[in-house]
Length: 306
Image 1 (spheres, rainbow, N blue to C red):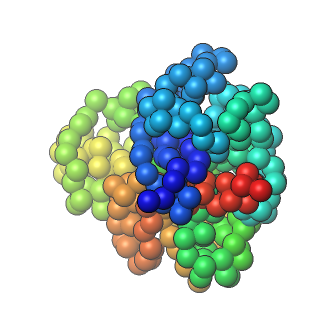
Image 2 (cartoon, rainbow, N blue to C red; image 1 turned 135 degrees about the vertical axis):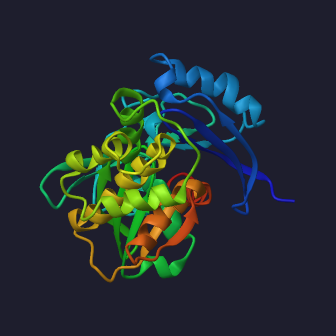
């Protein structure tokens, strides 16, 4: 029976996922904790890790590798960003070891990039999933691939020969939440409606003039546009995702023939896949948890198990 080897944590803004990884690379016990760094006081992460996370997984004697916002100014320690292009070996060589922790605890750095439009961009945590996605299939380490990681702040990543070449962020998930809670489009809830979602994707057009297109979500209800109030939510979702899908690949500077992959939560990836299909695009879909675990496992192999 495989023996426990290390503790792997993906510690984000709102949640913490932790796995005990065996010496054959498989995941044993897993726990999810409502310990996102945005909910913790300064200096609290270390104590909660020792007093709650380790005991819950019987992992008091295991070394640990952490990624995500735990390495930001909100987390345990502020770990400097690495510059893209970067690969797994670069991140492994830059693991930040917490002084005085026994067993050893190391936090992965995030990445920063200069976008093709000249603007800066950053990520913490998603890079481990992307590099784990590459590690799961040797074919992904060859040539160019575009990986879309949906979420509150969706990441579009150009992978070239197994390294993260560059990326851009779209605040689609956060914008959806803000509009529903703090705008004239808010207060209208309803079930998922594929027809309303598809109408929103179509209304997004080429993704330009989004601020104007968004108002159609109200006008279609109050101006005789034939849309029921409970269809506003799926329509708005389709409009925002549709605009992102239409405009972001060009902003990333992605080759038109590069294979397209969706990586992350299955429900959210399904929404994006539907929007892609609406535009005549196909994408593979991969599980974000599996990729995160593969990335942390590879990071431990290269950066700590030496």
